View 1 (cartoon, rainbow, N blue to C red):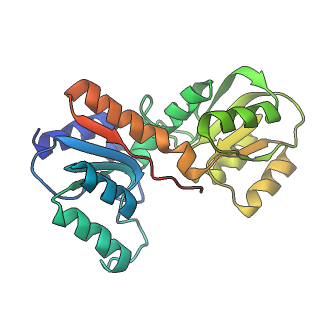
View 2 (cartoon, one colour):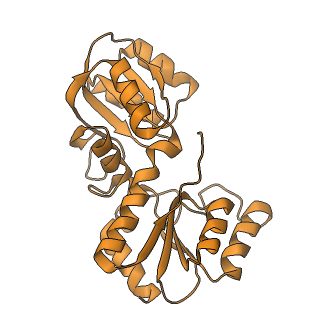
Length: 250
């Protein structure tokens, strides 16, 4: 498939222009004009690029790409080595950040909810593109039971702060670094909040506002959107797609 057609498919599917983001969404580094073999992964690290080269991929599709707002504009050091590897091997790099978080079927939030048996209800923020969302556990669980479920499903023990001492029924969540939404979840009177990371103040917010909090890992909570996107492209368009998980304990 022509790269331009591939780009159009992703644009129609993920609607990147509908949300303001911290990095460009879409084609970030141009490679070959045709797309046949795709590697998907969470972050465009050197490890993922090397694995894609070994696999013979012509395209890499990630959640965390390059050219973030506020970073240095110079192409030196680590950034230079990564981009040089892509250019030397004529590999396209596509990155989709918030558009992949919020997609109602393939997105990180949607996929995490599916894995943890959470029913989506609505966005946590006003508007149609809320990055944080809320819903309800399909079966109420104690904080300990929910933490064990997270560990079993995501293969990572979460950080837990559970001041309520009651079973969890309602829950809000945002994959990745979404700890800042805990206060909004508490304002909504929600029982628990789940995200990838925690900040020092997050624990105080949980304790003082009486909301259970779970930090299950930035990487661990964001593996599944990009994987689902690749599987969709393989099923719908016949691409050769391989998801490569470069482990990250954060």
